[in-house]
Structures are given as structure tokens and as C-alpha cells.
Image 1 (cartoon, one colour):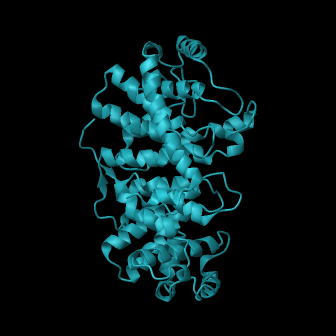
Image 2 (tube, one colour):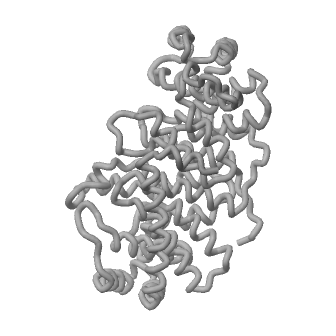
Image 3 (spheres, helix red, strand yellow):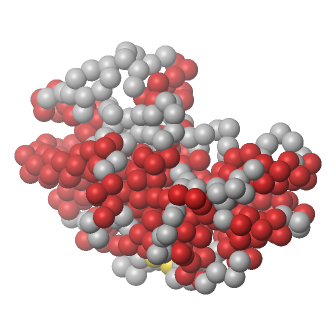
Amino acid sequence: MKEGFKVNLTSLLLSLSESVDMVNQNSPQHQLRTAFIALKLARHLNLDEVTIENIFMASLLHDIGKNNNFEKKINYESQGIRGQIFVQGVPRLREPGKIIRYYFLEWKDWKESDDRSLVISSQIVFLANFVDMIISRDRYILHQVDDILKELMRLEDGVLNNKVLLGFKEISTREEFWFDLISNGLYSILLNDSPIKKNKIDLEELSSIGELFKSIIDFKSKYTITHTTGVSACSEMLGNLFGLTEIEVKILGVAANFHDLGKVVVPNKVLEKKGKLTKEEFEVVKSHPYYTYQVLNSIDGLKQIVHWASYHHERLDGSGYPFHCRAKDLDIGSRIIAVSDIFISKMEKRSYRDEMDKDEIFEIMKKMGRNNLIDTKLVDLLFYNFDIIENFIKIKQEKTLDCYKNYINCKEKEMNKD
């Protein structure tokens, strides 16, 4: 592992944006398409480079606060606040976070805001989101243009800024714009046309983005609120005790934060089912490491993290899923996260059982080790150091619980601390 390794930020945000959109199978690539529209419009309006960059990043993540199952009907005010709460821990996303917070606000509701850049940026994302939401995926795109413009005209009176609306009318006259928008290669188009200037991030910034998506993943269900936090904390402790370097432990924590990213595709009715899953339901659950792999594998510079994050349900004898790796394919990072994931899962309360005690978990995991499913050395290391590992996990999980309370309560005062 090289301490100075770099990750492509645009590639990372595009892939993570797609993972958020996996939740809604009816609107694939919604955030990518919103970002494309917003980027073209912002450039057409000759906005400055920093503003364009912030609009692009905000568009890619504008639905980040929507990824939950607590609301029957979307409350955009709450969604915007939650979205901003999520991104506050990533310094580069704090300005885009303000746009995420207000992108749904209508022009007439801005009143006399002093931050004109925020107003125009939010209005651009508003329009871009609206346009993609009314596009039919089942109808030829050029046959829809007139209808889309008619729908936009209804928003002229106080909903959309006239300058923003006129700018969109002008770019909509080019067929190329529409063909790019619905292209299967939209990811590549955005990757190549990214306005992000400082496009390489280091391990520290990658770690902060991992923390962001850890919350998105775990807050999807009340039974997994602190799961990834626990897996990451346990993995870091085991890595330290095993003798990994400081950088390797840091990377291990990042990989653990991403390990359940693919769970966004698993319906909550399956995750929270009271009782044993059917064969069909379990087959749905088995897809989540695959989607973790697919999302992370498209990001330049994450090869080691991809394997460590995606192999947490693999077993040494090849009986795991979904790749059926064997011992020779599973290095120490993969083995640590697999052991940590089992340990934390058994410690947690589930919809179908209460949490287990130390002795129960130890017996289960020792048996798994004897049956060549997981690494016995790591099981022994974990339980030999049980008290210090458990204490470290609890400290980390308590912090996550505090964040969860803010997420649920949507307290606007949390947004005004900076």
C-alpha cells in the first residue's frame, strides 16, 4: 500500500450517485441525468467555475437524503436537511450541501436572499431534477421535447427563475443534448466532461466520503443503524492487533464502511422481515455484495478496497457468496472484514431475534472456524481481546446513534453550527 495513493473524485461521485439511484428501479441514473442537465445549463449561463463545480456535485447527490423508508410521502424540506446533514463531514461537499438543502425551493420562496449564487444554483438543480422526472423512459426522447417545454412553461409564474428557464429552452433546441442525456454512455460522458478541477483525492478525503455513505447504507433500516460502524471499528481493531500498518488499517476501515453499499437494492420488507427468509428472499439478499463490487469496481484507484469490501460473505472453503472465492483468493483484509461482519451481526438485535451474548457468538464463530469457513486465528484474536474491542465498538456506535437522531429529527439548527 502506498501512502500517497489517489482516487478519481469524479469517478467516485458518479458511481456512488448511481448506487443511490439503485433504490428506485423506475428512474435509473436519475441523479446522473440531473447532473448532466444542470452542468449543461450552468455552462450555458456562463457561471463561474467554482459555482459550476458545486452545482455538478450537488446534482450528483441531490437525492441523498431521500434514501430512507421512514416517509410515506416525500417531504422535500426534511429530505434537503437530511441530505445536508449527510455531506457536512466531507469538506469538499459543504458548499454543494447548501444546494442539496434548498434545490426544491421555488423562486418565489427565496425572497431577498443575499446569496444569489446559491439561489441560481438551486434553481438550476430544481429545473434539472424536474425535467428528468417528467421524461418517460418508454417514449422516444425527441417526441417528448415539446411536452417537456410545455410543462416547464407552467412553472414560469414564481416557480422557476426566468433566466434559468430561458437558458434551458436554448440548450433544448440541440438534438445532441437529448441524445447524450439518454445515452447508455452517460457515465463516460460525465466522467470526461467533469468540471471538477482538483479531481484526485487522498485517503483522508476518501475516508470522509466512506463515512458519508456508511450512514446512507445503515440508516436504510432501523435494524442496521450502527452495523457498518461496528464492522469498521471491529475491522480496524483486528487489523491493529494483527499487525497491519497504519495505512492498511485506515484502508481497511474505508473498505468496511463500503462493504454493505449493495444493500441499497434490497427492499426493507426483506431486511426487516420477522422470521426466516424464504429461499427467494435470501437469493435477493445474496445480491448485495455483488452490487457493492459493481459500484466500487468502476472507481479508478480502489482495487484493494473493492476486494476487501465485496468479499465479506465469502468463505474459505468456497461455500460463500456471490463469487465463491476460496482461501487462496481471500487475503487478510477480506478475512478480517468477514469475521467482523459476522461478529457485529450476531451482537445486534434483528427483526427475527434478539442480540446474542458473548459465549453464544464465540461458539458459533469457533465452529465456523473449525469448518474452514472463516479464519480461526482471527476469531481467537477477537475473543482474546474481546473487552477492548467491544469498548471501542461501543464508543463508535454511540457517535453514530447521535447522527441518526439528527437524521430522523431533521433539526435545522444542526445546519447552522458552522
